[in-house]
Length: 289
Image 1 (cartoon, rainbow, N blue to C red):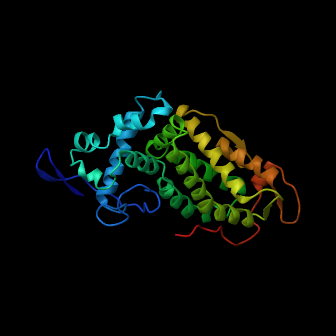
Image 2: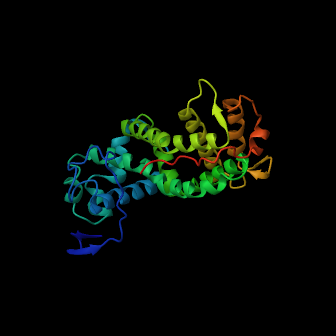
Image 3: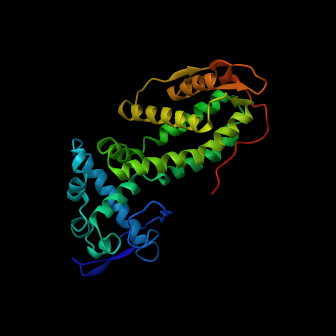
C-alpha cells in the first residue's frame, strides 16, 4: 500500500494491508464506500496502525481515569497528531474519513475489539474438528480447549482488547463492541456445539439454551488463557484418556454433566461423558460464510 508523506514530499510504500470486511464495524466514518470508506486499504491501514500504537501506549499506562477516555485517547492517538507525527501522513487522511475526533476514537475502539480478530483461529479449529469427532468426547473437548487456550496467547488478539475493556468498561463503544462480540460467538459456535451434542447422542436439559453453553465454553477457555499468560506453568487436569488436559476441558465436561442427558434419557457423570464415543454419523454443523 502506498501513501503520500508530507514530510518526505513523496509517495511511500507502507507494506501490505489485508483488507477485512468492516461493514457494520465502523459506525462513525464519513463515507460508507469508495477510497475513503471502510473497505479502503488506506482506511484499514490507519486503523491497524492506530490499534497497534494504542496497544503499545496503553501498556505503559494502566491506571487511566475511565471518565477521561476521550482526553486519554487524544494523547495516545490524537486525531491530527497521530496522522502527522506517528504515521507521517497528511492529517486529511484521517479527517476525510473521520471529520470528528470523537468518531475516530469510537471506531478505533470498535476496530480493536472486532470479532473478526478470531476468524483465523475459528477456521483452523473447524478444519480439524471432523477428525476429532471420531474419538471419545473427552479427547475432542481437550483438543478443542487446548487450541483455544493456545490461540489466546497471541498478544495481538487478546491483550489490547482485554486492556480496553478493563480500563474503560463504561465507554459506549466498549459496550457496543461487547454486544457485537456476543452475537458473533453465538452465530459462529452455536451450530457447531449443537452438532457435537448430536454426534455424541446428547441433548441439553430443559431450561438450558445453546447460547448459554456458548457463553460458558468461551468464558472457561478465555479465563484459562488469561491465567496461562500470567503463569505459563499453570497446572493441568486429568480426565479419562488424557492425563494432562487443560483445566477448561475438565470444567466443560463437568458443566455438560449437569446440563445434558443422553437422547435415551440417561444421566452421565463427567468421567462417562469423557469416554463417550460418537453415536451418530452426522458431522457438526459449521457456520455460514
